[in-house]
Length: 198
Image (cartoon, rainbow, N blue to C red; front, side):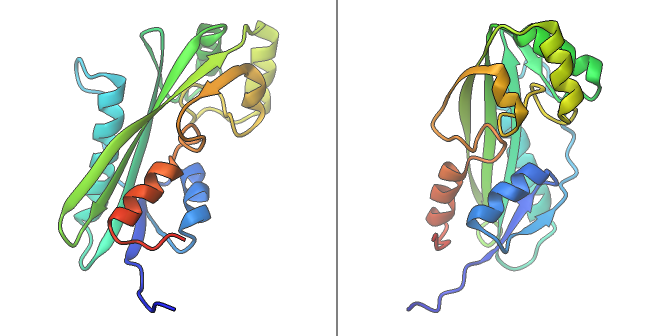
């Protein structure tokens, strides 16, 4: 049996959803809070924004480290028919987002960056998930927003919770991407940096 030890892995995120997902493949990962302005740039696309922010989060934490660490940054940006679906922040905004998404297709773009502090090199990509909302009655939307805490959730629906009942379909290469951290892509990236998985 090999005695090789994996480098220290750090998640640059305070999201409990990303932390829970990462624990599935890296139970000993450390957690750091990146201080990054998440305001979109002028004329920036949702895909470009998700990738830029995932890199910025990883970079912020990487710059605080000495020795070899593998830093994971991630960010998700959603859109529906040209409208950005940000974190709603208030119940009224959540209801408004879900009214807009009713009967439509939304795209959730999850940026992922893995940064090696030893070489100061990184790899990033964006995993996109297509989500079709069923036609929703306003009473359903209001009951849902009252029942589930979605104020910090882009798009105002948690597919890993009661929000799955609002959907017709989910199409994408990685089911964990929609929750916030694409573990299939992340596993591939970590292996490319010499992290042993499993």
